[in-house]
Length: 407
Ligand code: C2E
Ligand code: MG
Ligand code: MG
Picture 1: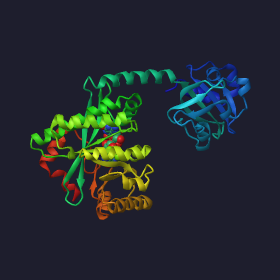
Picture 2: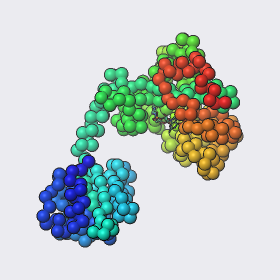
Picture 3: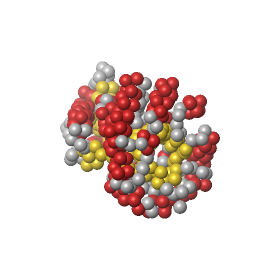
Picture 4: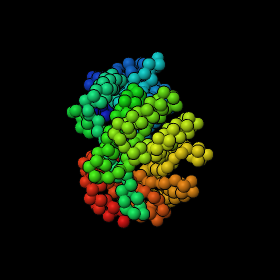
């Protein structure tokens, strides 16, 4: 990624002398520290990015000269030079780090850090090569945002469907709709890479409405073509299920409109909401959920166990299903606490007379563990990845390949 790396590494070993004679390599900023973490070298680009002159910076603690925070939560970023020295290996900052200049101005940086060695091969310090990527990021963001604005009218979104299977009968109990963006020139983009931007820009409202309409259309089509009555779950984000009455009304109106337009049975619709979305406006959530339930829609709590549900609310929310987060299922057969949490969630769901499903089931062992503990349903790569509608139709019509694995 950076030019002249080997030259930088060699020269930085002799930082002070190097500073007198070195050309500026590639325009990247370079900062070097000794073993004690004090600044031993700073090139001109680093002077302008940190706001510290070389003379003032030398021998000061690195954190004072090069103040880096996490761009999202503003906590101090881990000093990558210290870990390069400690572990004697190359490293980088986590993404989205912000360098705060001496005068308070900020820039988003990308870096690479390497330990430097003395003549005997012992670690003698570390060097960080970094650059300001604020403009590149801003341009990239603007690009993505304007592409997202067009994506809906250009028909670039699509839904894949991941089956859910009942553990007692091996029958397919429904599918979950998962959005993908077929961005021209980029291929199929996963939701985690664009849903947050849809939320920030408010585009999640029209795109969410598109998802609801597409799902209703799919339910109608599967019934019309004889595939059967298939329940489809839709993921809702906080912006769609907001405390603002206008938005939740819009959700209700849009859903009612889609149900009528496609003439489907609303009990075949399910909304998946994460705990944090439900709990962020708990009192309002109770009212909104009751209204959705009156329309006949089923409700499930997604990623259960990672948020902080109040058990008192859990009793008041008109929920049908609890979906145990993938995080607990991953090590459920190896980690005693994950197993204990999973068993406790299943027991709690059953005592509240709720259906319980585990997501992220990837192995036969996980499936058997869940079956032995009376989990009602499972979903995960072991049974099927999310698939295009045509492939799910075949699975539904054949009805055999999938359940066979569940037995
Ligand atoms: P989610 O609702 O918790 O969906 C489960 C995610 O886990 C999906 O990722 C799915 O492909 C993945 N998954 C399923 N089985 C396994 C497994 O066995 N192992 C592993 N490692 N992963 C598995 P995907 O499709 O990338 O979706 C990510 C998230 O994006 C979803 O999490 C959901 O929160 C959000 N999302 C997806 N579609 C929509 C949508 O239409 N609207 C909104 N608002 N959010 C959506
Ligand atoms: Mg989900
Ligand atoms: Mg989930």
